[in-house]
Image 1 (cartoon, chains in turn cyan, green, red, brown):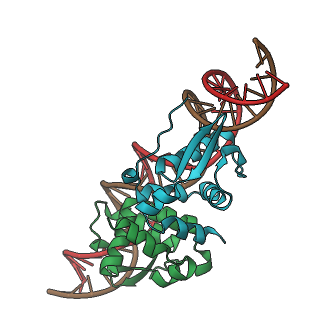
Image 2: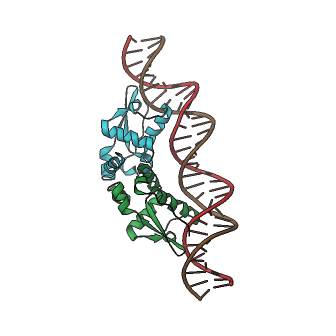
Image 3: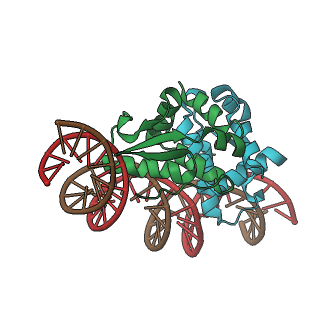
Length: 101
Length: 101
DNA sequence: TCTAATGTTCTATTATTATAGTACTTTCAT
DNA sequence: ATGAAAGTACTATAATAATAGAACATTAGA
């Protein structure tokens, strides 16, 4: 099984998080997880090819925004809500609230 | 005198704001204005050429993050604190707090 | 009226990123 | 075992963005 690298709390940087969330597709993915809970990649209703989805999920994971867990053939994507809250208090909730319009 | 375009409140988009703030140089500029108030471009202590500074200030302005006012030969840059607060409540304060580490 | 100061514009370069097609890997179910 | 499902890896391309040099524009002040 492949090892997926997730940054540790201290290695999550604000610029990378903002960068990850500044793309409309990725913001939509994050919104979706916030609204409906963790999901496999193919559940996200965004208009991109599989390989592009891989790219976006990796970007979110490497920025420290999501946690990816392998379950069979699926990769379950969850928000690192608590880690983000610890590192950048209220950042994620405020962005999610801002994007919900 | 040159007319500088600033987006109206409704035309400020979250993705653009996050994108504008995801660059370390621009984040530093915004932090600096938050800490010391509005300033002319050449006051910012960032390691970039004049033309690059122009680019960053324009990016911030077009995203709706800053207001630029001409005063003689100087361009005074201020944060659009109230506009941003109205459009995306708490977003800027939370980002500033997150970046202050 | 020069000149210095401040910033823009234009142009070019390099780096990054979003995109997707194709082939491959892994796992589950039949 | 075989095949479908889910996703990755690799490769390529087009778009975007960061950078700066050089020339230019505008204003203030001597």
